[in-house]
Image 1 (cartoon, rainbow, N blue to C red):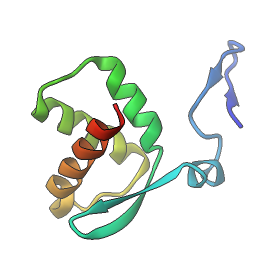
Image 2 (image 1 turned 45 degrees about the vertical axis):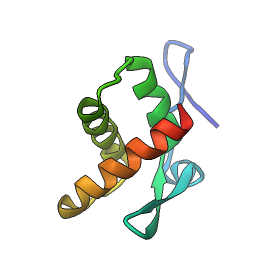
Image 3 (image 1 turned 180 degrees about the vertical axis):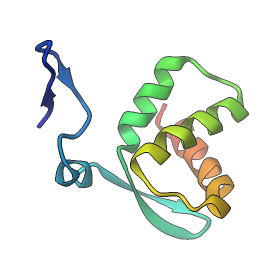
Length: 91
């Protein structure tokens, strides 16, 4: 299910919380398995940016994942490392 924009184009942003919940992917963050919403979409968006250096990639992945998920400030570095690892496996 996609949202229909007024221009007639389709937006891949979920229309509601229930749709976002269907897009949860489980990842291991420091030995704890957590579910992250919209991770595949974030990976696609970041891949399109063409970033290759580790620090900019981690920052951008974390920034975009935080749009859809709560990430405790004290755990941001662990999440960033996990996101980079998963991104590199996927892309």
